[in-house]
Amino acid sequence: MKHRLVRAVVATAIALGAFAVPSGAGPTLAGSTCTGWTSTLVPPTTIRVYRSALGRTVTVPFRSYVETVMASEWGSTNPPAALQAGALAIKQYGWYYARVWRGGRDSAGRCFDVRDNSSDQVYRPSKPPAAAHLAAIAATWPLSLRRSGTFFLTSYRSGPGTCGATPENGRLYQRQAADCARRLGETAEQILRRSYGTLEWVWPGINDMTGDGRGDVATVQAAADGSVTARLLTTDRAALEAAVSAASVNAATVLDVIPPDATLLGRLAADVDGDGRRDLVSLVRGADGVAVLRVMLATGTGFAPAVTWWSSAREPQPFDTTALRLVAGDFNADRRADAALIRVTPGDAPRTDVLVAISNGRSFGPARVVLSVAEDLSTSRFLVGDTTGDGRADLVILRPISPAVVPPPTDGSAPPALPPAPTGTAVQVAVMSAGMKLGAPATWMTAPVPPDALKAVVGDATRDGRDDLFVAERQADGSALLAVYRSVASASMSRVVYPATPNLPLAFDAIRLATADFTGDGMADLIVFRNLGQSADGTPQGVEIQRYWTTPNGFTRDPWRTDPTLDWATFDPL
Image 1 (spheres, rainbow, N blue to C red):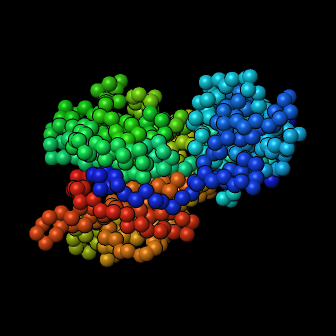
Image 2: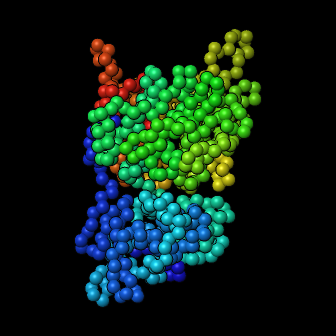
Image 3: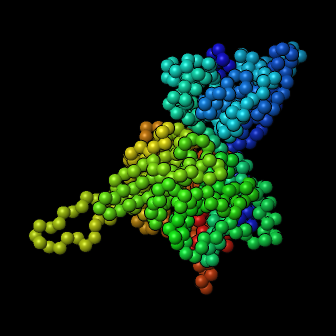
């Protein structure tokens, strides 16, 4: 497609949970057309290609088709971001016509979806793909694009060689994409948004831990002796069967041990090795003041024992690790999550630093300062997500808003005993640049409750490629109101209250949140863990797990199940 215009025509009780989830990705074939693939979330398995030189139609495995077109149409020396943009455009072009048949038939009457020449996409099986082609295809294979919710035809041309020299007019220019990536450091997501305009970047299976294309959640339990175990909350049949098999012969595998004189400073889930499955990462500070990042890699059916990926003792410049906080995200757009450490220095010259340790898939590099502000943000909370839709993780800061301080009385009476309590939250975002620096935090919205009355987790609720915040807000009566703070293109957020059906009151202090795309439709769903308290004789009743399916109009609640073995005092949902 080089020179043409185209028309846009875990206890096992948890593991044995319900398999049936709302389907957004059924690979159903429609026999009334040619290949007739109907899903816009799962790529077709095959495509029918008319071979011009042979004068006949052949059925080709779809991924092989994309690999061959990449080798035929995109040079392997292009920057990785440009190759990724091209891989997605090639895939969606073929995918589109595997769904929408134009009526093409060869001389024998056999139908085809695409031709093997520049009338569609050049397909030359004699030209093998390079490693760079295969890497770009692998990095973008789960992805698809939408405009206003519609799966569209992705056209591209060779184009000019200067980024921004020619308006894209709804198509991708190959040479321009290379220049945008090489000279400006643009990501594949930025290139495609530049080329196709306002679009949704759809990635099904957000927060997948098993590799089946649907999201999962881990429940991590820390015992009194410091041993750490984890269970998968999943609908992946292979992982479920493995969990049942393991439970029949062993207790839960101990993944790590936190010594009694050490302190857990943070724990989270993120895909640090870039294999498409989220891993578990812990930040632990020893009695000697050395902090380490311990990684439990996802195996597909569980997690491998923890391995140290970073130690503060190896840093060129030692620093105080007393009150470090941990967040993580893909800050450099290489499909691997990096670790970010928040370091607050209080006092007369307060400072808050954000240090990022880049993952190479096997370890984290040195922690480098990417943001430093002359403020004490110890009362703020920190999250990470791609709020701008450029493929790079940004830092989200939930910062308390306090009323103006009342000046001391002038009549000699005593001033107020306590400073005024915060009345709201400023949701601030520090945007990551191509140069690996976080910009100054800017307020994107304000929330009506202070940070300590918010429980927030990150996920794409709108399927537009921009991460949002799923939030529970404490109400005056102690109940929790569920809302989504939606990231929008204008560098702001909008607060949307998401009604749940049927409505069930939740006590704010008795819930914990997680997100995962359980349905595989590209929209993160909310998972609520609810403490069931104790029975009359003091026996813990365990934890109820509710799933809230995300729809454009709100949540649909699925009570799912109860796990009587989870210890509310010591477990974390990740």
